[in-house]
Amino acid sequence: MILWLTAGAIVITWTVLHDPVVDHRMVALGAMIPLAIDVWFGRLAVGHSLFAAAVLLTVVMLATIGHRRLRRRLLFLPFGMLCGLVLSGAWTHADVFAWPVLGADIPKMPLLPPLPVLAVEEVLGLLGWAWIWQRFGFSDPARRRAFCRSGRLYERERTT
Picture 1 (tube, rainbow, N blue to C red):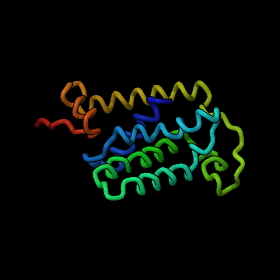
Picture 2 (cartoon, rainbow, N blue to C red):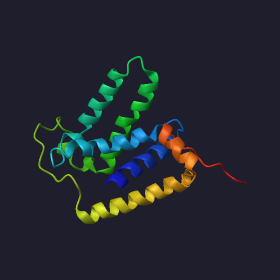
Picture 3 (cartoon, one colour):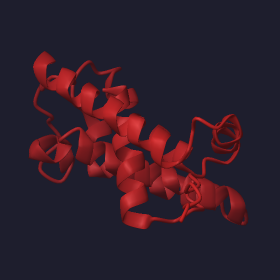
Picture 4 (tube, one colour):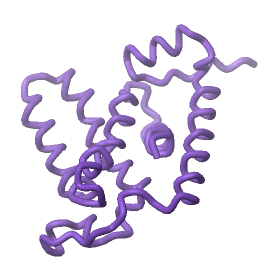
């Protein structure tokens, strides 16, 4: 599930925003937050709700008042969390996704999909990472270091 969530969130973010200043490290980390919260419950729970993403956004906004640079970086955590909710299919479980709007009780649902689905997701995540690696020239150690330092994806120079 890790490859699926992280690569999927980065690919979605790059495709939608196509902005070179996005910190994709924060996007990938944000995509893992619902899973990191709900692993403690052992099932789908509040981490896979829109409410949790809204709380994270509120915390980031309040905690970074007067710190524009930090805010610009941390705002991609809730964005990544929303990507994680989409990629995990949380929206298909209305009682969890819309918690607490549809009621305080969350039905007991497994945290992970069935093993065959999980295997397909991880293979797709691996393909996503292979695409990221090739598309952004991560075979170059300098580009990998730059990504680790800034979280930015740089397009490879086009040759004519």
